[in-house]
Length: 313
Image 1 (tube, one colour):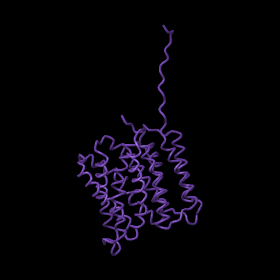
Image 2 (image 1 turned 180 degrees about the vertical axis):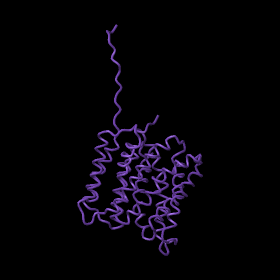
Image 3 (image 1 turned 90 degrees about the vertical axis):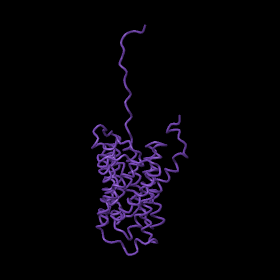
């Protein structure tokens, strides 16, 4: 019987690299899309094309979710925090900060998840190591943002981006509480979540100012950036991520957190001409260390056998 530890690289590494590339490229695509679209329109376009792609996948594979009002309601709550709100906040943040800084701040998501799991799931207490990771991660964020730069501190962009990652943390925790008994496949659940998000974001996208002239033309680069966001980062990446979880385990899949900023930073420097400050590198390293500690689970204590008094026969 093949275990997760024995899973060959070829069974999960291509998907792992695909997720890293798709989510890493998302920050570049957002930056390009913002040239002609408002943040709400970028978010809606992303989930719209993502939903279409996922629904087609579900129909082709036959993994249709069994719908009930209760399930749709639970998915809607999770979708609000996992996709609807944060996917608006991220492009809004990138109007004020670089794609590099946005991707590095995005890596704080596991810190928020650990925090909200501790706050909202009483049975899972934070260990001292995890608490140290949260504190270290907070210090890393301060370094990453250059907290001592009073004159040009990116307050608004930082608040918007950290708001998005906090939403991810809440959404991940709520999904464990509200969707733990749902038996649908990850692909089916993802298609339902992204579709519900599209309905949520449609009104706010329509309320935004009209896109720039020519933004919806077939030769529009920002339009294709939005399509790429939906097809890769909001559909295929979800499916690939769960394939990594199934083949190599959740711990290996979670390590994509460290790869996404590397891809985004390389694209920011090489394609967008952005600059990477020394303190962003140092802060990212501290954040990654905090994330690693915050994700560590305390080892279960070995059960103590009752002492048997008396002499052996």
